[in-house]
Amino acid sequence: MKLSVIGCGYLGAVHAAAMASIGHEVVGIDVDQRKIDALSKGEAPFFEPGLTDLLDAGTKGGGLRFTSDIAEARGSRVHFIGVGTPQQKDSYAADLTYVYAAVDALVPHLTPGDVVAGKSTVPVGTAAELSTRIASTGATLVWNPEFLREGWAVKDTLEPDRLVVGVPEGEAGAAAVAVLREVYAPAIANGSPFLVTDLATAELVKVSANAFLATKISFINAMAEIAEVTGADVSKLAEAIGYDERIGRQFLKAGIGFGGGCLPKDIRAFSARAEELGRGESVAFLRQVDEINLRRRERAVQLVVDGLGGSVFEKKVTVLGAAFKPHSDDIRDSPALDVAVRLHGLGANVTVTDPAAIENARRIHPQLTYVEDRDEAIRDADALVLVTEWDEYRRQLPPEHASSLTDGRVVVDGRNGLDAAAWRAAGWAYYGMGRP
Ligand code: UDX
Image (cartoon, rainbow, N blue to C red; front, side):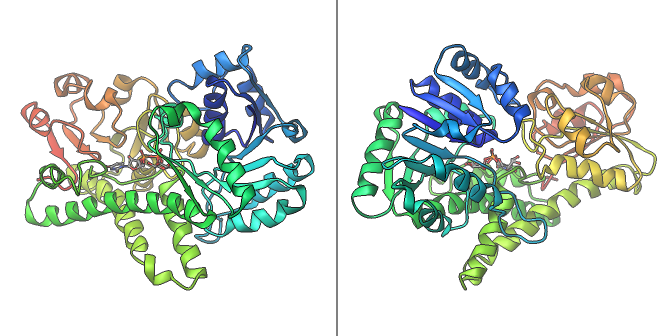
């Protein structure tokens, strides 16, 4: 099927490449010419395992091309909207500028029977508003939220754990469902559940899923705070409650909390939208989820200060990680980088290392020192702080090896990813999050 994907960021680029890989003819469209140039050469403009292979195969005769000319969307049966919805500068609400701009630019190129499928995360009610904007074209607006995780984006797109399509009532909606079933035929044949809902439900599925995940993380981090004043161990606690299938083990890793381009801004936008709807109290807990999350960064900083005897001033602190999570170069709202910046603010000589995110981090925070080589970064550090649980820092850094690089013996484990006993046995003062 001929498809267009408007917006070629983390979501759109992966979607375009994945759709081409299952046999569709796809044009990816973005206003950023630099991104288009890279993608056209088969290069991923960001770190995402598996994406380069798909781009390479797709752009070399595999039915995938990229352009900055929106007119090339004409003739596609489905137009996916995958542009960003960042947090507004002066409020918690989502900034919908890019969504409206993309749809308005698309309108002159739509033909009757086309399907416009929104994938961006938007406040509930946006799809209804967009439906009126495209009404005169004879195209149908549907909402098809995306649940991909960075680092697993290709797999999540090709083998989604569910497909959700919100459609309007009536014939046009039913026709759009049939079209999307065809688009996603391989995943459906592989067993991915395909749920049809109304527009508002589809929009809400996405934000409520992210709100739940954020709440789960903040729940375990709240338990970490209690563990810290009682001498309990939150990692053991998480393991023990996780055996209850109703609770489950996933997303119960206590540490410096969640970040990234989705969870933080999505729970804030959800709060803002609920306020607008007169139901602010229904999700008032999301404010606390946010607050708990931000407190954990401060806690990690405090542990470094305590570990270094009350001050980090002019001490060399090596921060292991900059990305908001491993297998990503994304530093948007990264707790890791925030910890580094706070330590720098306290006068520490901060050295940051990361296998993928240094370039992005340097652009936003040029005041920090960046060292690509892990061992060079660790050399002569007074303290190490693990903030992104890359294997390079978690599994592949034996404490004895760290001891050979520096006389500093303080390690703060912001992700509870290290073997505390092994580090202690090697002579290090180990500080975990919510662990004795
Ligand atoms: C998230 C959702 O998982 C995904 O479904 C949605 O489509 C987009 O938002 P992503 O932002 O890629 O995906 O990251 P995710 O893997 O969910 O991790 C988010 C943050 O939570 C990371 O900073 C991670 O380190 C942190 N986290 C995760 C924890 O602190 N503890 C956990 O137990 C799990």
